[in-house]
Image 1: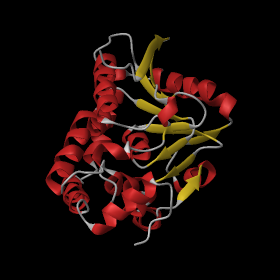
Image 2: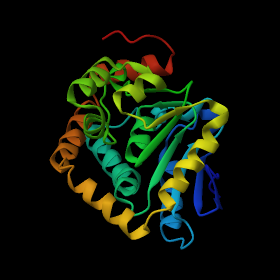
Image 3: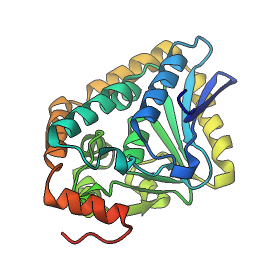
Image 4: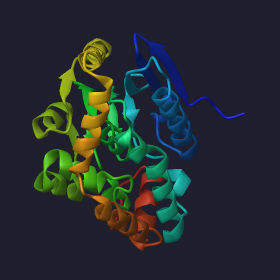
Length: 256
């Protein structure tokens, strides 16, 4: 039997999904991605759910990244298929969903975790949250839409700086850049999320659905996602990738 890596609840027309891998800082793996897909589809089809909230267990991490050990031995072809499947199963699914999805970022949102948050329609973060796409320090690049969604949110120049440096930024800086919509104290995250969800729920569900589709139509990044997948996969099998992953797993700085 599979571990329950997610916890769900419906309350006042809000469908709550909590990632439950606290010991692993809620890191993404294939099993978790599949469970999140099932939870999202369940709430999409749930007649009483009007808004979906995605958050993490504990106060350290929303999602601290992908489970590196899962793909550290991949060849380029495997990496390309891995990223494509993840995008289709979860990230693109959320972005195109007809019901609004709020990311309640309760801590670290790094790598795939930030890509997951960016695939949501709105983002609220606690003051101590840290956000970034540090993949270049591993000898790879973001592979779940980060190179496409980040520029759309904060502009090409700011996205270039974040991705090429791999810098991790504060919640206040993320707010300033437009990466998140609100910053709140940790003890206010639940309250602020509910308030935002209720603001959305006052409006026509059909209009919300149509607005999401219309806004997404302005994002002509289909070619960009394909190019990201190619460049992501080409990083695998290189000496830089091998050194980056080894350094990460050995808890040392890489020597490129």
